[in-house]
Amino acid sequence: MDLSRAFIVRAHRGVLCTLAVGALAGALSGCVTRVVEQRPVVVERPAPPRPVVVQQVRPMPAPIREDRGAQPAPDFNWVPGHWKWAGNDWQWVHGNWVRQPVPPMPEVIVETIPVAPAPQAMWVPGHWVWRWNGGGWQWERGHWQR
Image: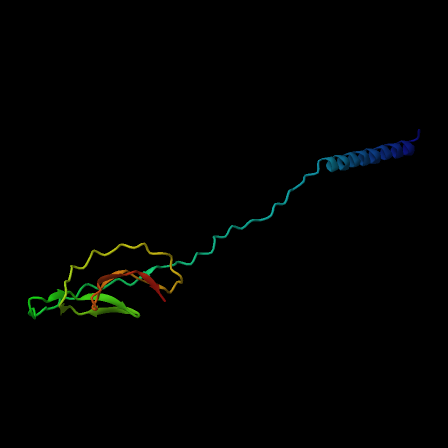
């Protein structure tokens, strides 16, 4: 074989070898494909704040000390002054002498406050009220006032 032909055969083998290695690499790279799994991005946000419902209680003021004065006659009894709810505020009912038996004001009844019907509602606690027409002490139940 002459020299030029031997060079061409070698060059041809080199090219074939390079092509074979390239083809093998391409084939192997196709087999070792790396799959990247894409996951959705989850951004956790805090829940929106719940509206704060503040139960507004309109407590009864402290009793007012009153001077009874002199008993008008032996058959008169003293009805102590007390607070009563009148419309949208507490109103003081002055004590008075009456011609009927007057038992002491009963103990306050503890009531469970139900859920407010509206955020702006105000709870008026239950309280005892004297009924002047001979009714004596009567319990006024607590209620929500708007």
